[in-house]
Image (cartoon, rainbow, N blue to C red; front, side):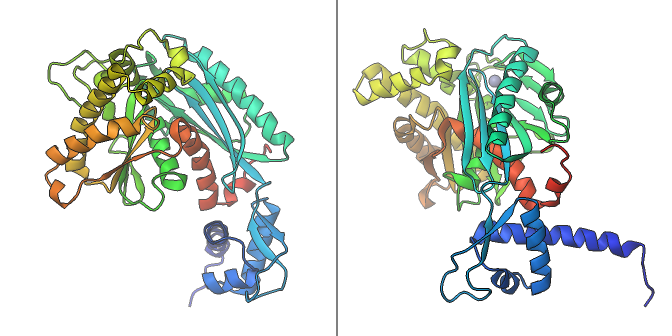
Length: 411
Ligand SMILES: [Zn+2]
């Protein structure tokens, strides 16, 4: 057979890089175990595993510790585990009524978090990004002081995002269009080679639910993010569905009334004009609240308090929002047939009052209803889903390709 000396090293490097990911994900998914157990379970030989584990330890992704369970194969007393104190990723979020930052380590532990209520509507994009950059710099300083190494940051945005360019194309509720968020943020972060990405907030919320929230164990579900805007992240076959241009999931702009109220997107009769947070607060008589107070969560807490107390205005507003949401979800369920619908954002704390009306509409509108309608679940992550998903996205990239960590020059 003809030798191919030039191609061989590149192929070997690619193979090694792939195997680094295989070993890291194996330990992350199955828990601490000995090198011999990893070799047995992955089918790679012991010396290869030792070398791969050594490199992953050097990269700060795995660590070695004692306490081997009885009956496990291998060197007694030594297991490798995912390192809690090696790398960390930042999730950042710009929403209409708040800014948020979240730092998560490779074990999923939260190492820093901050939420700042702010009325970002009509505010210049560069001013808001400047404030977000300040929160991000504080977060980077906080995690570095814990000895952690940042490996990426992802920004969650409330509108159409061109992921490749990291640009927010349009966000009707912010009044912004064509903002190169990632470029503007990088300029202000002194980010070095730190990867900075952007994505739609509902997409990131759906990923957070899939990886660590109400969607764990589900393969097909729809995450509905209730904020001042309403969005959705659609998971099909365990993967996020984005659509051809990446603009899928704009659930808030599904038409529920052909000649309904004007919407910020330019259309009319959109779901958001009936079930968005402001429409809901208005219907409940809480419309004197400004975006700054909605970002603090106070009006939703007040709505929950009134609903618990049996306030008829609050209960009626919640039930009506549930009807509008159920009408739109009926169409979505007929199209997609998901296992479940996860209500997130501000919908999570009010889910128990939305659910009866949503269930009634689904029973009435879904063609396959007599074989069951999807369960309507409340998000377990609430308003933090998007920012947690943003941090987790960067970590999942490293789990997929640990070699990325070696390429970062700034630690
Ligand atoms: Zn609209």
